[in-house]
Image 1 (cartoon, one colour):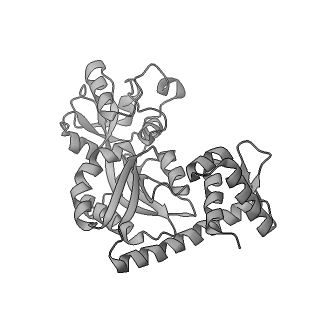
Image 2 (cartoon, rainbow, N blue to C red):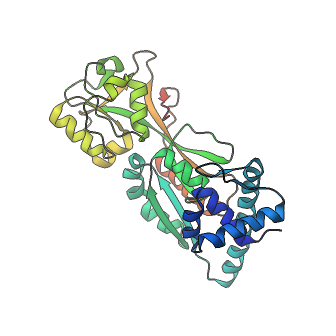
Image 3 (tube, rainbow, N blue to C red):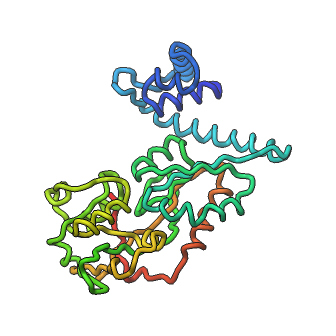
Length: 309
């Protein structure tokens, strides 16, 4: 049987796909780490990594082995948690990742609530783009991700949190509602590539590649985009909770109705975490607190949930 240390080395090499970077992350020399990986392969009688590729890749055996190793390490963490809990020294560390357009309101809304319901938890919050969150979950760099759906991946569990309408920030139009066709001739102000709200805007507004990639300020700061609309005209899309936290005037944020099906664009905010986790109790408290805070009358029949991919 391979040792727990060798298991950690295998996971590190799998995460970094590079022996030198993995050894630095494990605070050992590269020859030491390579030797331990080779000893594990000899013990198991199968090669774990294909060293002929750049970057390294897992062999068919390695793919299956990594899944088992993650489960073993997860279960051993439960033992450590139990012993520390019984001795009164346990402080669980929970790492939460969230996309910027949700973090803008979620963290300020929920921070004090989380401190109240998670008194023995050390909570770390980090902003990432959607694709980065998925990778971080797979690498065990975070324990829970909060982002826009839909999302489906067999090794990760998804729980819906709430839905929110997406509006058009467009002060130049004075009616309370507009149709999506009204936006065709206006300049779109977009978040940078990798932000899900950008992709949702491109899909819903039917933006061509030429129009999406035309001269533009592109950044991760939605508030800056709204200022560009104020100065240069055009429009941008704003989730309703973001509108609330910035106290944006309703006269500037218009309800959009699809010209094709009369539906209202919206996004579904979801939580994602591993199917098997020793931190489920804390994760559940975070999930339920968000659902309670943002729960509202179900308007699902009106909404067209936009895809972020």
